Length: 329
Image (cartoon, rainbow, N blue to C red; front, side, top):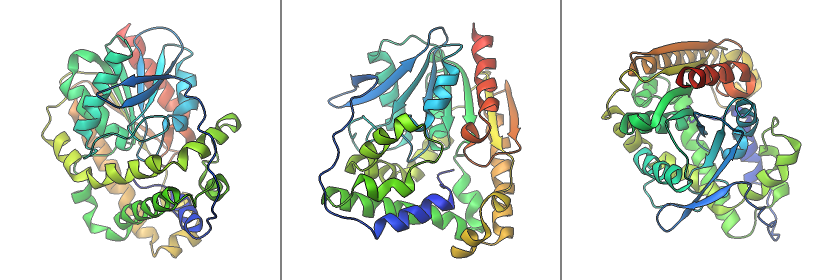
C-alpha cells in the first residue's frame, strides 16, 4: 500500500548521502485552480468535458503530476480532476494530524469551492483509496461510483504483522523523507540530488515541475505526516459505514512482486521470495475484502502489474472508470 518500490527506496538512500548547497528552482505556475479551504489553499486541475466528473486521489508520496497520464486518458470521455493533498505539489501545507478524516473534509471544501457539481466518480490509488473510501461513506449523495486501485485496506497493518521485514520498509522510507526534508529546509537539497528518484514513466514535459516541487520541504513532510497519522486514518475507515449499493470496482495487482523486483534488491533488504509471496497473498485477500464494502461491486485483477496498476496496465483502470461514468450518465 504505502510501500514504494524497493528501487525508489534505494534512490532515497543515495540522495541522502549526496547533497550540495544551492538556491532552489523557481516554483512553476500551478496549472489548475488554487482554492481556499479554511485559511490555506489546495490545488485542483481539471481537464476535459462531460459528467459525471472524475476525481483522482493519488497514493502517499505522489502529487497530481503522478496521475497526469491517467487523468488525460479519462478526460477523453469526461471531465477529469486531479488534486494535490495538503503539502503536495502546489497545495499549501495543512493542519495536522493528516488523517483521512482531515483529508476528506478538505476535499469536500475543495470540490465545493471549485464549484464542481457532483455526483462524482472517485478514483483512489493506495493511500488515496482509504480517503475516497471514507469520502464515499460520508458523502453518498456526492458519489456516483468508486474505483479503488490497489488500495490500502484499513486493517492491513494487523494482516501484515507476520512479515515485519516488509512492513518495516514503510518506516524506513518515512525516515528518509524526514531526512530529505531537513536537508531541504537547510537549503542543501537540489534538483540534481533528487533526479534518481524521479519516476521513470513521468512525461518529459512534467519532469522539471516534479523536481522543483519535490524538493520543497512541505512536499517531503506531507507523506511523513500522513504516515504518522495512518493508524488513526485506518480506524476512521473501519468505523465508517459501508458504501451501500454505490457502484464499486476494486482493481488489484496480480503480478508477483518477487518476480518483478530484482533479486539483488530483495537481498539488500533481507527480503526472501517467500516473504514477498506471502505479502502478495495477504494483499489479494485484502483487496477481495474491500470489494465487500458495497453490495454493487466487482474485483478486477491486473495480472501484469504490481502496485502502480494505473501505470503498468492503464487500460484496466481507464475501462473501470469509464464503466462507472457511463453507468451514471
